[in-house]
Image (cartoon, rainbow, N blue to C red; front, side):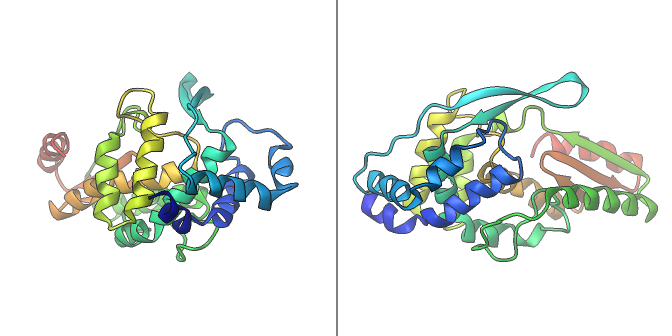
Length: 257
């Protein structure tokens, strides 16, 4: 299995994506010289990681949780990963990304506005500017109201990233027909990093954002199939209803999704 995984993982592309997260200030803890030290002998460092995978010597390190301030005096548990773990995480999700990309393509920019995916799954910058997505999310919401929505139901998933069920997430990725070897390694990593057994993925890393999108894809599909009009940005969901009765019915049905 490990030799097959080593052939599957593109560590050069993964490193570009790790650096992209650093440049975009996605990670919560950074050292100004870490990436420079790695790139002093990047080829040697990547080859060492690949050999560890090939000979089944790679094991993910524990996740370090750092409290990150957010609005209204609240905090979120940021997930700090070692550089080898960031690399393998990006590589495993990257190996699954073409299949995930295809599964999510239907909702991008029409229902789901969070972390808009690059049109090319091989693009080192696998998501577009997230702030543009949030702006469009707000603009589309206003347009929905101006078009006649009398009621808007706002839903938010409390402690979303911390409560993602890893087994369900792995099942969702598997359903996309992503490579099994990459998915198996991804499952090992996520379960190692879980702060509560079987739950939670690391916040502050683009691979987690992509997995979170897939995790909520079934909610988007169900709401659409039920005939509701909604928009979503990560776990912030806005459903636009034509009457109070429809809005109350949605509240009952939303709890069962």
